Amino acid sequence: MTAAVRLVGAAKRYDDLLALDHVDIEVGQGEFVAILGPNGAGKSTAIKLMLGLRHATAGIVELLGGSPQDIATRRRCGVMLQDSGLPKMLTVAEVVRLFSAHYPRPRPLPVVLAMADLTGLARRRIDGLSGGERQRVNYAIAICGDPEVLFLDEPTVGMDVASRHRLYDELARSSAAGRTILLTTHYLEEADRLAARIIVIDHGRIVIDGTPAQVKARVPGKRLALAARRALTPADFADLPLHRLQLHDHSATLLSNDPVAVLQGLVRRDVPLVDIDVTGAQLEDAFLSLTGAGAAR
Amino acid sequence: MTTGRPLLRPGSLGTILLAHTGAQFISFVRNVALSAVSVVMPVMLFALIAMSGADREYAPGVTFGAFYLASMAAYAVSGIMVFNFGVTVAVDRGEKIDLLMRAVPLPPILYLLARVLTALAFALIALVVLFGFAQLVVGVRLPLDVWLRLGAVLLVGSVQFIALGFAIAYLTGPNAAVAVSNLTYLVLAFASGIFMPMDSLPEFVRQIAPYLPTYHYAQLAWTTVGMDGAGIATSAGWLVGYTIALFGLALFAYRREEGLRFG
Image 1 (spheres, one colour):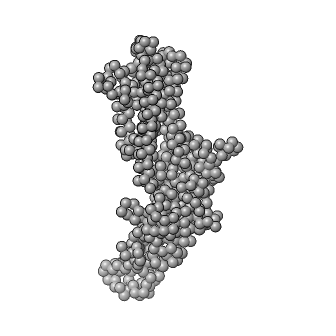
Image 2 (cartoon, each protein chain N blue to C red):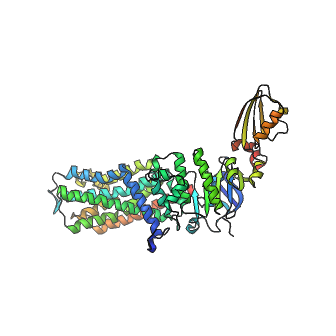
Image 3 (spheres, chains in turn blue, red):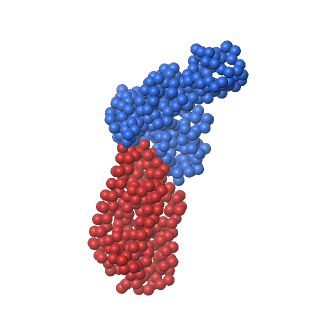
């Protein structure tokens, strides 16, 4: 079976910036792949090469075995970009109808609206929508043609928690139905939750290409901030599953993929904790703990 | 989706063209600042200038009303073309709607064609309103075939302004396009005697007018209502030349932009 996407030695240079440094990516049909990386890592560039929105400086780019510029190939793909605009004078329903016209077997309008959670907004004009609502319209445009391959560039940016989770459910359903999905994100949690395979990109290079478990072993996803009644020492944290421990007298910050184990370890050692704050780690922080090409810079 | 006609199958080029033409037409109508001005301004100017004295003879066999109607018709159609392309294309770029259009299976030429059809449809509306006003309110009397020829000549000749608008949209930024379109177009229209008759313009303007695209465009309209002029063939020749040159410029600007944003 032809690959959904194939990049071989693909590079993209913008003036003196090498945004993508000769990467090889092959995504098979039916795969759910997340491309993970901090801002400016080259994720969007990779997607734009795959879609023919940018031309590779070097290397081979194939979409469903053909050229991404080919209209027939593009009809089999749905796209949600991060920075594209919408015709703001039209209503949500009008926009979905407009974009459905490009595809040979479009999904019925009510189905698309329901899938993108836009049923109640069908008659609203684009210029009256919030950022998160516009993202849902972008998602509707991506899926209205019932595509075999779905590209989503940072799809959840600007969405509230409820919409984000509904989108996760939708994507899981599409994936279960055999669709190929390729999304970019800078949240490890999102990639982990959705994808069967994660490609980590930093500084235009692939740092890791593996299962979520393999990636999590090397990229910490949570940030813990702790405070104790006494000054904390490195001994308190010895042998616990963590990265980038920073001690400041009575408080500490660290990155970990297993915050529960860290806390249990501290409790076992009778560390008198007075405050705990667990948040999702910024990839920019998490990457500093990676050894390898990206982390060294 | 129930039509069995091959042209309108889902995903066919006809369906795509129709969908985009409809969407652009609706967008333009809802952009009242642009659409209402395009239709109302020529009528208002015509009313102000020609309401009194429309019947007096301006040239042998031509009333002032007929002459100024031809001027305003030229102003209406060329204005819609310049602004529909200069401004809305630039706005699309600024809001990155062009990026969205490239990400979907849409042949770029269809998007352009949808714009041309939208602009032509709007120009036709503006002409019908202006002609109706001239005939019913001001009482301009012209034979039916002259009305029809005037409309046809202006719509066909307006192709050069599509190119002009396009060139402006791609040579200037999204914000500058409105100002540049306005300035370029108003200066051209004014210097060609479209707002005020040539004989009331300063000498140096009268010297350069015969080299302007708007002048020859207006000449087509004036000749159609019976004025003496440079002659249809000469004016048409100028227009063809300008159309080719402006399309060349538009293509150059478009290619340059392509390289920068999608290279």
